[in-house]
Length: 322
Image (cartoon, rainbow, N blue to C red; front, top):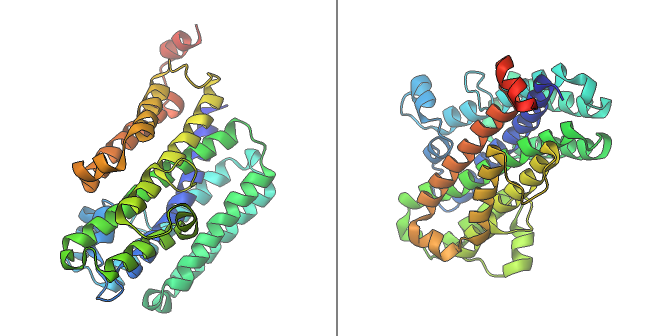
């Protein structure tokens, strides 16, 4: 497969997943604020966008400014609108590998968000319906891609991109709860705390499956479910495992034969998620564990870029082919 095609299909899928997860970020923030005033700064800090936000808006984390920044601001490369623009541009560049229904679903998604951005006043006041439409549009694209695209190398690159983005954002959604805890320690262990953890599960579409597995709401068990569960499709461990399977399919090496540097990085992170216990995570610090996890995911991103997307010198290409 051409590097250009692999790169575009990877980022098309990743940007679509990012748009969906930004909607989850905003949703969980409003839910975590039950019983008190919404805290908007955690959304910016947990997503790593504080420098850009402060350049544009200073330190005033008002609802309107944060929502506009995250949903529609074209100056924010991670806003929902920006993600959809870039997803559509990448998809347009690889129309030959996408089915017509996939392109149409992506285009509909983009047009819905673009039209909403033209008059966002009501959405910024009451964003819940818009956020739900974003998630449903993302699920539509994923479903069409699963049903109408050959499960070849292009499909596997799309899955790698989607799963890496999902792992990243699931961990960051947990970090939003951490930032809320910093300013609300008096509520720890209270009924409000349970309501907030329940809301976090709802925002990740995890509440029903969590209830089937564990029943009662426990902060430790919620963290374990979202980070380390091997069967729930939005957990970090599950996402890394699925991305690793697709990676080995692309390289042609069976699982367990980790000769390629990028495969070794995947295997190392996957092994850690398979063996680490939630008690040790909590003891070390959930925020600290997520920080280390983010560093590991960044290493994977860099390794994938170098291995598959970076334009290599001709001498290096010839060496790789020997």
